[in-house]
Image 1 (tube, one colour):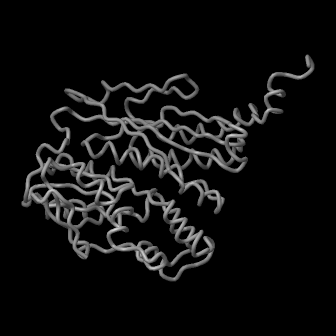
Image 2 (image 1 turned 120 degrees about the vertical axis):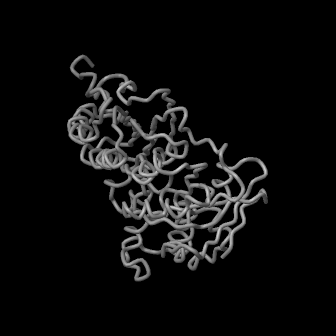
Image 3 (image 1 turned 180 degrees about the vertical axis):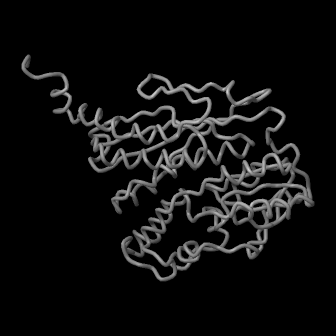
Length: 347
């Protein structure tokens, strides 16, 4: 026993410390790309650090969000493609803090693996860093845990935690939402990171489709389409924050339109939305056709081509659409706030 080092014993238990050290070396350059004003170099420390005073906010309010990627990960395993799933982890968190009017300032990730593969971990963290760079927030820390027996050797889980900041006077809390406000919807990139248990059931389990097969309707393989990263709305929303009075906002995630839109409304308020006034992504028509899914069920699970919605005064609606077009963001006037107390969709 004395001739076997602790690291060798740990390796026999399934945890490779040396691979862990190699992973840290490989991800350092990706972490460095995300540094912004206020971020304090803390890679390797026990806690990530950020100097909030560097933001110059009068009354800073911190807004936090945490999320994972869900069973979309199973497609990454099947496709052996791991360089974009980290973008999903970032997007699911930063898009949530944007809803309150906060700009993301830092992010931490948690990666649990069955076996530490430094090259694969580098690809995952590269995606996280890509998402942070696009979101203009710093990756200030994270954790990688090798957990044999908990996960298969080729499997992992990834989750994230984001903090954003906003001046207290500029918080978006839904208190300004009024009947007659117009809804502006920002286009999604596709399925984002929601509804993949249903997607896998319909397309992979029941229809037994091949992820590597080219699908004419999608103009790419099924796997490429489904692994399209969740759209980040940071650039779009930061472009609007100081130019439009946003009364309410909603990130369309799991639960689709029916669950997420009411979260920005006052009691007794509802919305009407014309789903024919914006283009649907082909992937949703494909899922609906293959699975024989009703319109209501589709809108109760998926974003259907609209990943983020804002409620604003009627006179600001076209201005918001035009401002977003300036930065090549597709946006549409899709409906209005009512006193119905329900989400009413026209299709």
